[in-house]
Length: 474
Image 1 (cartoon, rainbow, N blue to C red):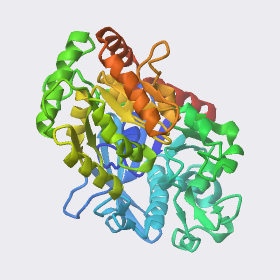
Image 2 (tube, helix red, strand yellow):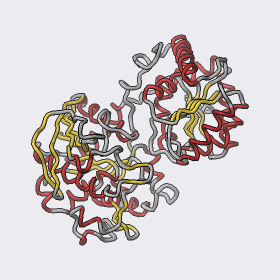
Image 3 (cartoon, one colour):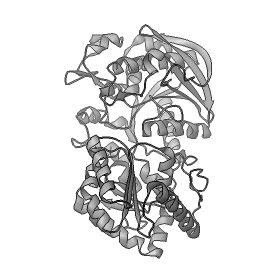
Image 4 (cartoon, helix red, strand yellow):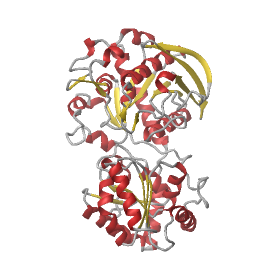
């Protein structure tokens, strides 16, 4: 089949989060299964002086603007970068610290239209797979605009929700600038509490909807996790599927990780030596006092969704329990300041890196004994998978993809520690259980080996997607 993935970011060309990782890793896995895959993304760059990779293959027009098609072959996937400087030469992909770009509706309406035009120009597709609100107008336009549908009349559409909380809701006056008829601004289509909701447009229009874990697919049908759209999703229940994200096992491989001083395999002696070397290296960089204390790592956006408030409230007690803590991430200022304060209050015991740093992330995953992910909701999550692959035991909440991937230490085949509620008391109780395991070499080795043996590669997930595509195409 000819499969096209349309998204607002993709590794290694642009990234703000896990969406880029997924769209960078799933298409090569589909190619390995014999599919022909194209990825279309905006040609993001920070200045006009930054050249886009690839070869020019003509241009497409929409909404009075044009985009040059730059085509590059990456990991056997054809990647099309839409070069439209007026919309995609920005210091960031979506927003600045003071808020979103005011023309985001037009930026991603243009993306949807230009991406579909590019696909038609390059030969079409059997399945058009759009990701998150930035690409949600793709299935909407294919279903409700005759001219757009005419260009690829047989194409089936899949829409993946990576995070339902981000919906692309705009005042209705943006519709004219997006080239969308006001006749489509109805309660059954785009209208949602008076706003034009791009995500809703994708949900009501796609031939199939997927989320990034089976548990999240069930959770978003409830008021607690449905973000107001649970009623809309209930009408599409029969076409809603939860397929767990995979992990890019080439990028995250402790045996070949160039960011580690001593890469390591799954043998227990290798794990002990490799993690000890990583701890020494990280300790020097983070200015942690040398010692035998267990290390808790956290690599995350600093936001309430990720449980940053829980960490901030518990840090003093965690240090008192005998743990060192290292945190890498940025986000809400109150949590950044809380972590800087904890670093000052506990010199040599707490280290906070308020930024994103790919190299440092690899070292934290390898050096840590425990990885903290106390998320309020987590559609899938990759950190817990990476941690297990590096012999690090995740401490997580029982939600979304965390519930689908981490088995509590109290059960057979335990790989981590699961909090049943989001409270400081529940967190410290889980860490007390973890501390007992860390002091038991046999139990620790068993849990590490079980986690490292888990297959989180994209192969199994890609097979599920191929099965879904085949059902749609018939």
